[in-house]
Length: 283
Length: 100
Image 1 (cartoon, rainbow over the protein chains, first blue to last red):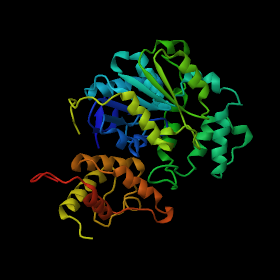
Image 2 (cartoon, each protein chain N blue to C red; image 1 turned 180 degrees about the vertical axis):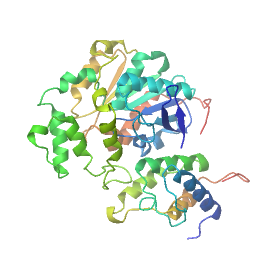
Image 3 (spheres, chains in turn red, brown; image 1 turned 30 degrees about the horizontal axis):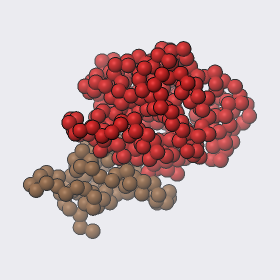
Image 4 (cartoon, rainbow over the protein chains, first blue to last red; image 1 turned 135 degrees about the vertical axis):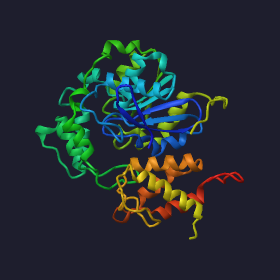
């Protein structure tokens, strides 16, 4: 399978398919590039040349002991685009991947054509989620309880505990839905790297820097999402924003898996009208 | 079902090539099962699907995976031969004299 070695020595697994303007798609924590290929990619490949990749520590990419903060993830993306000679793609991200897209747009605006940020989380918005009464804790506990894994009251805001417990829930989407997860790769990421402590670092995109993001951003959240506070904050402060609220779904946060056709429709909307077929059509 | 022997040979070669990444050492046959034998995850299946589309052109592989996901959990699996049949039914018609 295709891998690229970055100047840092890190090897990232990637896939490319389709033809048209370049679109790079960034998955979220605990995921991998498959999230895009289960449905969305098939709806985009006639209009765009997709680049999907596994973040460091995920999928078939290397799992170094450190380097999991958003600034480093954005640096990995820059190195990946340089290695593949992609100058100025659309950048689509989901959850932590949407955070990476926004960090990348802030740090390297000249390398971004536009951003589609789906359910961005952003460490700078942590204060919205700090309280015990944040809806996300209740939503997460409810999902775990429905799956036969009730959360003890004293653990309901314990992120590490919730992540580990979630590994016991069968796969929810895709060809293996209903089958058990293989917890080993993510447990290794939790236990043998600094990922858990690094992903919440605000680094180079504090709240006051959000208005500096000049790229056009299609900002996608789901009705009823526990992150709507972040949606409201961003839509008021991003200077070139197209806010989208998807219909309510069971889990809400996992739009690329729960309602991929809707998500693809908004990505296509961000691409604008079809371009003349002069783009390089490469594999 | 009589599968196109060229497609079968091509799929066997591709799966054998990817089997190195999947750390699977046994011979790949038409009866090899992607889940029970090869232990593939969703990521492996989409990598396989992308590789097939690079070789054969656009395929409804997302639908193939979705159909697999609807099969009963207890018996869910798919063999190399089923994939060959899928390709035979769905791959674009090759150009005259063209490769697979």
